[in-house]
Image 1 (spheres, helix red, strand yellow):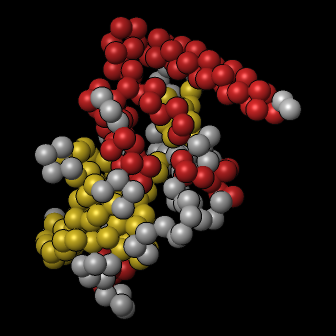
Image 2: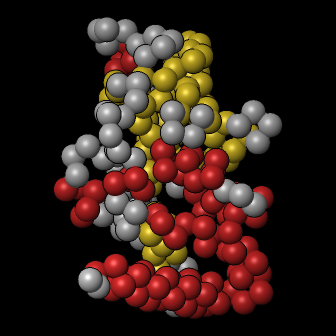
Length: 220
């Protein structure tokens, strides 16, 4: 898992090493969706996140209804994600998670929880992220502590996206996530190899530009 994330106790979980089971940062995903300026960029973000587990913190419960799912009692929940102003919807039915919600003090509307779940998609009409197989990790506070706490705010060089289906793995840092808007176009034109080469080329250009900027600012 990203070592920078592990060393910063105040941060929420970052994108892990580039394997299919890696858990990604749900709050960062939600924020990136709201910042996407083009539909293609938003679609690329959703496509890359779909089916993968994401860890969300500070989810304030705005709707909570007790339900039955596959013969088990659970809770259908809609929660507010504070960094993006999006909602996250899911149904909790795993016994350990249900027990955590029912533990004293009993979780109610207005409380916050931290949840891991697989992104199933996004309902654009309702601005809602849909999660499957949710696990309630712990009861949470309503918002980050005063100061920067979201990963991209504290460490823009942290891994935001990884691609492992090409000839070699490649990662995108949080500050370069705008590159994802080109994903569908490049993959359609040249496949995984072209996407990897595109990312490597663009990332190399940006590293050179940042190095040059840093060098200039360091000169008296």
